[in-house]
Length: 380
Image 1 (tube, rainbow, N blue to C red):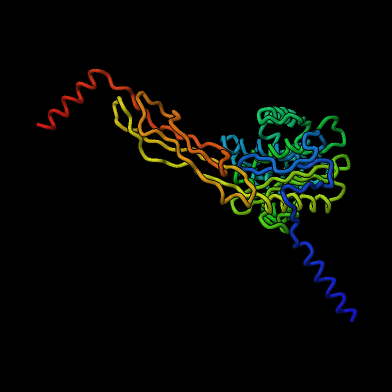
Image 2: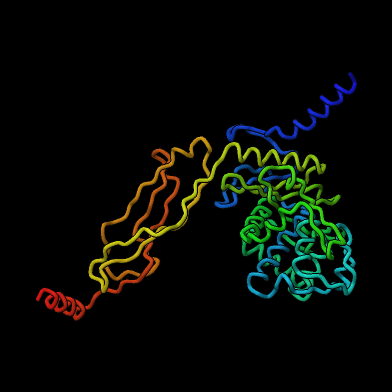
């Protein structure tokens, strides 16, 4: 009998985590943390926020900005994944989460990036920063410059890794974390690393396990960064993708790791249960007639568009095309000549620009005469 009771208890503990938190988009709820935000990544639409603009210590979530600058360095060619990075005395002296880099040890940039993303290695974060900028101080200056560029209004970085024992004003808001997270996942390569559950470096001699447990236990989770210190509490920026929609859930100052993970799950469940992404990819629309030009047509196309709507309203979306039958020369590439209205019933939720893809100059008097002459010759 005791064994049967025990087996039932075990079964229940296995089932309970699979229950989905489901709350209506119109029903208020709170997150057990100092601040939180839920953002749809494609459009940047905020679906939930709680004290999202208070500047708070972020712990290792700081490394999102560090990684953003690292990925930009890879994109512009100043850093390659197979570059060997030498560990300085300063980098090897970092405490907290680390991969125990020794002074003078060399490791590939890719292994250092994996160490930062998966195991939140403070020493690898500093080593990467020093390699890119020459010193951690110069790299931090670039971090703050990038924050301003992205419109992060409640952020001040003092280091690359979030260690805050001696930091005086190393702070960021939940909204700003979502903004920089959205920018980072624009570099798709980072999701290859952040979605790894377990890996290794040093030819398999040192194991890496993802600090973000949602990667293993939450459907669609693919990133991004956790953090915790006594000053910051437990923090996370978590990303997940389902049915083409990517959500960014940020939780700051949660009292425990388990509560942080549960509240993040609550946010993501809320987003996926109540919202959907309407997306229209940019594409060519063929040609439009041009009057008075050196050519009598111009190629046109429309730009991409996305909008977050309530799941129940996705099928109600319709489009209305507003393009003239013809346009007059001169036409410049990029000129807007019409639009596609995106409607929810009678309410317009957005417009998609229709633009010219080529240039058509206005025909001159002699050009008109030349065309008449050519036509005359063809008739004969």
